[in-house]
Length: 387
Ligand code: NAP
Ligand code: ZN
Image (tube, rainbow, N blue to C red; front, side, top):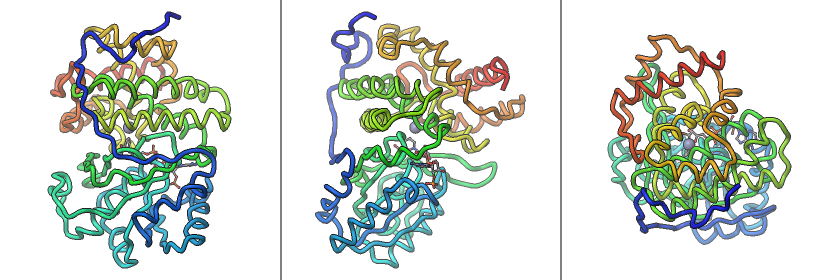
């Protein structure tokens, strides 16, 4: 393999040098016990937000309860967050947060509880906030947010984004909002908490993390810092993700992919994602397919399309990953779930997908024609891989 020099420089993409950073990441085995008391700088009455089971099962919730008891921090647990959290669920949870009188919100879990924690922190202070004002970042300062990730992952523990499900039934759609004011004040990264993830969740969340590196790198607004995070992230994520298709992961593997996913989070925090995400949202809301898999349907095609104008940059990724778009496609489609892909499904996805405004890759804007092209590709692949 050739040595890649000056990896972050690109001859074609812009060299924006602006970057914002306002995070405190603590990491390593037992970082909650060792450094969790830092939370006391910000809050003394914590509303803990989790999903149904995993926060307890992975050991994180026990560790925080112990920490809080030992340090005189009051807490209440809300364990009702479901996958792809609905905005109305977050409003309901916020009422409990207010009733408890919390002065801080801690999310423990995958992206769903972490994103929900951010929304709850806003609604707790702004109970009657309209959807429009939430999305316009127009509200009183939220409660401080703290985050402990248990998947590797969305990177939500270091982003100011939160992705909500809005509407119901046929009208349901996923839409992100963001504010630097909900960026977690302290992020806890202990790979022990990811050890309990089953194979399919490991793959789905790892595919998501890889997608964050790849998409952030080619986002129009991206710059040198993002490319640093993205390339370092993919270097840590990819070998472990590839291994996870066929083998059990060790603690060291889990630590690598977790830290890689956090770097990927920092990449999207300073730029954003591209069409695999926005087009994937419609697949998740329509067929209930996990977020990471929904993005994964598009990753190989995203690289192929960008190699037309940005071959040198695509090659940087492929060199680090020691792979090709064809190999990524075959690997991903070996696990990507099947879903109904009739002509009627295609029309519905185009209609939903083209509502997304989040397709700002270096070369493609999200018009309907483009949306149709990318969904058609996925439908063809589902046939090609006999799904
Ligand atoms: P998730 O939706 O948070 O969780 C998926 C499943 O994994 C749940 O059943 C959960 O169980 C389980 N789980 C979590 N941690 C586990 C562990 N350590 N062991 C065993 N099971 C575990 O998954 P996710 O992929 O991390 O998050 C997806 C969400 O994040 C989507 O809504 C996506 O849009 C969003 N997202 C946000 C950002 C951002 O920057 N904010 C970026 C990308 C994606 P429990 O329900 O019991 O917890
Ligand atoms: Zn994602």
